[in-house]
Length: 99
Image (cartoon, rainbow, N blue to C red; front, side):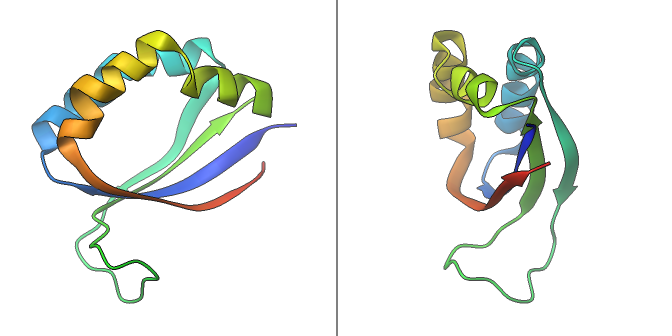
């Protein structure tokens, strides 16, 4: 069964984060994943975290095994280290659910 996550981020460097998205997208697609929605947020009215969420998106996969395979993929982990960790200061997985 397909699985989807709703993720909130605080992106501190849009340029580096954009490079991360460009580089990781082919890996995501090869694991039968994609983004459903993607928003830049200017104002959060209520939150359960102490950081300011300025990016909100959904990411989904055909099944849990493919999702786990993506997030443990060595090439992805290197891109995460090189770009994501340098451009995102905070992350919250708001929800994970069957799609």
